[in-house]
Amino acid sequence: APLLLQGSSRGGTDQDLVAIDVQRLEVVRRWSAVMRGGGLQLGIATRDGQVLYLHAGADAPWLLKLALPAMTLSRIFLPGQGSPGAIALSPDERTLYAALDRGVLALVDTRQARVRKVLFFTERETVEEHWSTRHEGPGVPNGALVTPDGRALFVNIETPIEGRNATLWRVDLEREQVAARIDLGKPSGGHGNLAMTPDGRLLYVASLHDSTVWAVDARADRIVQTWTDAVRPHGVFMRPDGQQLWVPNGGRREDGTGRSLWVLDPARRVRLATLPAEDRPHWLDFTPDGRLVVVDAIFSDLITVIDTHTLKEVARVPVGNRAAGRPTPKDRPGAWHPKLSPDGRWVYVAVNYLDAVQVVDLDRRAVVKTIPVGPSPHQVHLFWPGAPYQAGWWTLRFPWVLAQE
Image 1 (cartoon, rainbow, N blue to C red):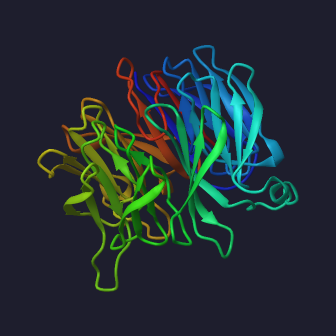
Image 2: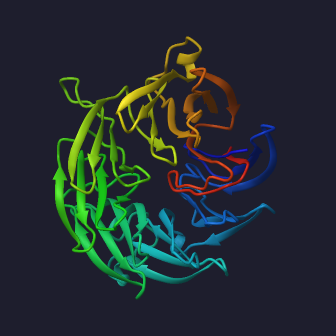
Image 3: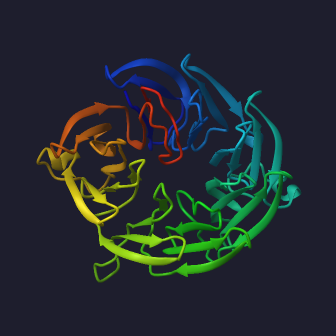
């Protein structure tokens, strides 16, 4: 059975973490009051799938460590009441890197489940003087990526403090020290994630608020190309083989144009195609072989599946209210963060205003199951037994749904 992970986007404190068996579609475990609002949006797992590290919410100064199959949950407390905006694992999985929202990088010993060292993306005295304020240091992190050779960690600072440009930071993992700061030249940095070519040479990041996409030479620590004609791009997504980079443009210009999907050749830094998109493309996911990609449309209640080789649409399926013949709300997001099964048959997508995850059978082009999961579902993460692969921030192999209520 596949694993689904779901997190709420609603604020508040003392929310529960819930485990649901996918085959029986019933709750099998509940941990009370371990989450905060907006939780479960970040997470990572060990390669053998035995341990999951979960983000506990936007205001939670801790990470959750979930050991499987015993399903033992514990907390890893972070320094200075900081909340992680990005996390990553070292290649040997002995260190978990948690970038906090005050210019702090916590290095967590995964065996002892405690912070063993703290690095600063700014002067230490400046950070320590302002622990009581939420956004100090260089700004708020939103994306972290370890290079393929395991020698460096890149951290993206999305929202800098007033008067400064957004930045990328490179951390030397062998010396465990901050090695470089890359000025992106815009007041708003990348959003959602980072992507890198398989050879580790080029790093890609997109700015949602400044409608910009950058290609960065990861070895020289400099920007080598900038696209300024994006329209509120919501992240960058590398096809598993590294041959294509997809960018969902969710904004719209005054003339009505803009909502689209860019397909780039990441090695040559050229745009291969611009595909039309519904209102509003927000997130996408590939099958492990990279042949198919699924794209959401959060205010159209549609999911679209595209063949990445031909760039042709394979399926378009209404979900949420649209599947039931009812109007789609415009005051709350609808279907977002879809996940494809490895065989391309099933799509799992959160429908925010329904407080549910829906299962789509692409052979039938229809929603076949609606699973109540709690208020305002946000992220959905899917993993298939026997087929480990990267999907979003996760790599897992267990038959559970993790939901937040």
